[in-house]
Amino acid sequence: MRAMTIPKPGGPEALVWSEVPDPRPGPDEVVVDVRASAVNRADLLQRQGHYPPPPGAPAYPGLECSGVVSEVGSQVTGWAVGQAVCALLAGGGYAERVAVPAGQLLPVPAGVDLVDAAALPEVACTVWSNVVQLARLAKGETLLVHGGGSGIGTFAIQLGVALGATVVVTARAGKHARLRELGAAHTVDYREQDFVAEVHRVTDGRGADVILDIMGAAYLPRNVAALATGGRLVVIGMQGGRKGELDLGMLLMKRASVHATALRSRPLDEKAAIVRGVREQVWPLIEAGTVRPVVHARARMADAADAHRLVETNDHVGKVLLTT
Ligand SMILES: NC(=O)c1ccc[n+]([C@@H]2O[C@H](COP(=O)([O-])OP(=O)(O)OC[C@H]3O[C@@H](n4cnc5c(N)ncnc54)[C@H](OP(=O)(O)O)[C@@H]3O)[C@@H](O)[C@H]2O)c1
Image 1 (tube, rainbow, N blue to C red):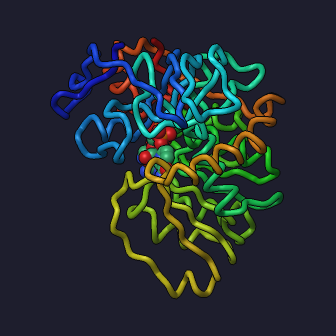
Image 2 (image 1 turned 180 degrees about the vertical axis):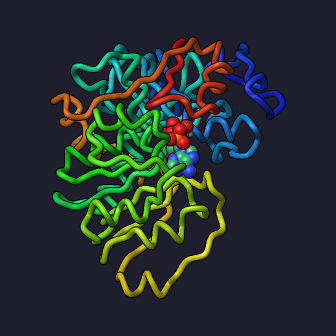
């Protein structure tokens, strides 16, 4: 098969579409013939040599895929050759075939195109596990999503609205109209406006009950300031650095909490539990059309370098897909 190798980490040109050995399924795995994968922020870091795959994961980038099952491991039940699926991966999506632990497979939701299904697993599992499972976002609460135009952000807006929350997003101004269409009640241009003041203004001084953060250190003090009493800050990205100052006094007075999680390195059983939760709670929303994949562009897998260049500009809204 062909897969995206990175012989020497670096810029987008470091991605080389090469002949490699086919994967074989372990007893608890299936092999998927990949129809599409998607570019995630983490792939840019992996390409630069900063985010190696966890032990046991395929060496090629790609944290999700859609496709058709072509082989089933000896211990796997419930999946069959020929089934259309999408999957959460620890790597290996930028390839023609990938071996996937069976617990990380999902059926393609009814009404979703096979290629577009590749836009779903990583964002659905990340947003659901953090915003619902961990932070327990409830109906009537306010959710602040940083990077509302990202793959993660566009999904978080829709899921937050579907759960009955009021969603506030930060994003560059050019993306605001699209993010309002997706359901954001309030949009903050972080280049021109102070998001702490904006969140307090639109919540009558209460603050945000849940914050989904991708900026890390750069936003930590302001995120804590933007939290409501009993608020939950969940950090999933460190685009603004990893070491910040935490005002424990403010956290304590608000009886608030700060969490930080990464999905890729979680043990297989935890990933399987997340995938089950997503299938039970999120897939029905997708099949009802309440939550949709947001696809900015499709590119050929062999042109992944161009897709990485596009994502590096941050001009996209939603996901950039790669097709075989
Ligand atoms: N921990 C986990 O398990 C996990 C899993 C998946 C993703 N993530 C993280 O989630 C983040 C989003 O991932 P993705 O693949 O969806 O990314 P993406 O589509 O590449 O989007 C990145 C976004 O960052 C925004 N941004 C840049 N500077 C900003 C700022 N100062 N304030 C607010 N937004 C800003 C950009 O929007 P503008 O154009 O508006 O600036 C862009 O939309 C990444 O940091 C990624 O590492 C974490």
